[in-house]
Image (cartoon, rainbow over all chains, first blue to last red):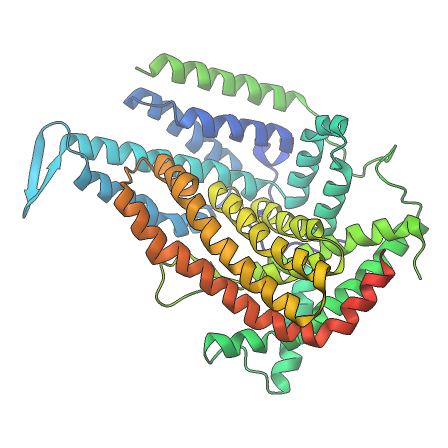
Length: 265
Length: 192
């Protein structure tokens, strides 16, 4: 079971951010996403930027990993900035490009929105960079605990999630193996019109489904042979525990919120 | 073949693995040449359709949900609105196919299910984009979106995209169903 995840962004490390309880990280990110929308002055954005950059440096993740995670959104951030530059008509005219007038309000607003976007992406990607998917599902299971009262099957959901995660590498390998086997028999996955490509996937999916069902039956049998009997009274291999550092981070974050509210106008 | 106590667990594990297959197919997406690049076609609805045919429409919904939650846990919550939109689109596509199939059985019910699923998804997503998704994105990024821009995005992007997506998945699923029909029917009887 020591198979590491091939997909995903997790970068192993031993920083305090890595060792925080995943519930702490998720709670803080949840509130961070909300307070980002409260920032409306240079000071309040400054507070958030300092917080985000500080957390980034504490993780000690090489900067190119973080930049790589941001690449798909650079375009969107720049596009939003330029859109605001030309559409917003507030403040004084700074300069003219042909018939377009660029207003100071546009520059300020474009910059603020781009910053907001950048902060959101940076902080949420810090979660997936420092937390394994399995820790995230453990945290989700724990945080959904109250829903058990209304008979929501929290344990079953968490079980399905962790089985799914565990089998991503296995089934990816299998997909690759089958597609190579079919390609060697002359199936063409890569070229041709969409209609032909859709049909080419059929001989890939048939064995994939059949073997997934076989695997599932074996796994269920193995689980029951080892005494699996549902979520009731089950102990955990990875128990979540709130440590001193979690409380410290909560206090720090409360200070950030207070500073933000203070610097806001 | 299976006794009742373990068949529930087998079902859970099967849905989990179908969710994994769905996620893998989700990553093998490709954009369409004439539509905006953020609208990408993938075959991740196929495992959900399989679950919906073998078990129930609700099983299909679970597979769609697992795929999207896994996607969030693996790649990070960069685009929560897109994830919610994907869940809703998946449900609108999978549920009609499953309902029609469980009522009438056979290839014809699959084809009519895929056609009605495609229509419901294309029109439903257009309405939802107009009322909720596009305004949510606009709010998120501080854009001002006029009605004209919204209509353009829907007529030129959302509507044809979802229609083509439904048709392409249908083109794959009908031959797949014909090939796997006896296997599907056999599995149905082993999980009552």
